[in-house]
Image 1 (cartoon, helix red, strand yellow):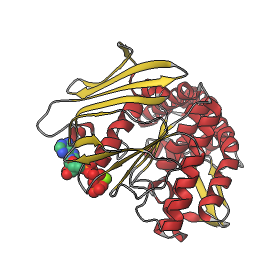
Image 2 (cartoon, rainbow, N blue to C red):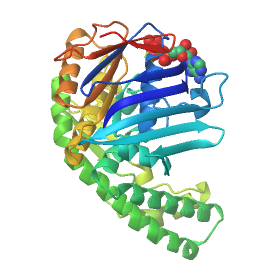
Image 3 (cartoon, protein in one colour):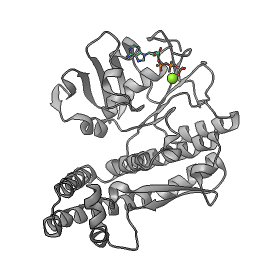
Image 4 (cartoon, rainbow, N blue to C red):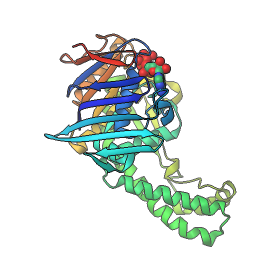
Length: 355
Ligand SMILES: Nc1ncnc2c1ncn2[C@@H]1O[C@H](COP(=O)(O)OP(=O)(O)OP(=O)(O)O)[C@@H](O)[C@H]1O
Ligand SMILES: [Mg+2]
């Protein structure tokens, strides 16, 4: 969906701001600490119900205030949807067209978005949980029953771990194993399908941004030569000792291969950013193609760490996606768009349209 109208109250340094973004390109510029990241984070919160910087909710509420409130009017095919989010002492409250709606998952379905921001290097250099979340985001938007499957798998994992901690013997565990294996294998299969669907896009984006081959190697979370069931049996003693399940899709990872070498430690900081951008653009392109509707892409200071040529290539790829773009920069003319973007200046948490 497209964001037609957005407002935020008491979110980080933002007192009360309103933004009517263009359906294509938007640029928000301002000095350091003026509120650019805060604004993008508020927009991302509307589509995720959580911070893209991993910040706890209490740190997102403006100092001295009790809660923050976000509102968005979203548009798709002539139909508008009003989304309201409030978070404070009572926790997250979500309203869609005036009705209370289920939390973060309802937001994610309404406003699919991706962020290219300061934390993006984690996708390449950070722990496997970043890449699992990445993979699950695509799966959530491409396979419509994935969220339910993933939740059921998490529940089976929790139950099995509780049984392990309670010291249940093999016969006590076998009931939990069956469900864990059934759901775990289905999560794994969905992830494999999703990777298959997005692989061409990743290769294309990687080639355009880095001029070299980029691909994923999928690590399912257990020895792929073996059945998950067999692994659970083999690991039983260790699982019991540790009180948690060692093998399964909750341990999956993606190994990123760049130029036929494992990317993680070899690439420079700028290359790491470009690899992560290729991943994000591939995810966005895949989800957008499946859903046949434009995504929201938030670019927080995309120029940081990139030379002119790399930034030019990145913007070219971003524009080719034809999604709604909201970007930030320190200067008003730092980014190239095919036609003039809507331009906003931010200063001390106040927003003003300047072009
Ligand atoms: N909960 C909060 N309440 C009030 N102010 C906050 C809160 N959280 C962060 N801030 C302040 O908001 C200001 C703006 O931060 P923000 O990250 O949005 O700046 P920015 O424009 O992105 O800067 P930069 O160009 O350095 O990335 C900072 O001074 C920060 O300390
Ligand atoms: Mg910032």
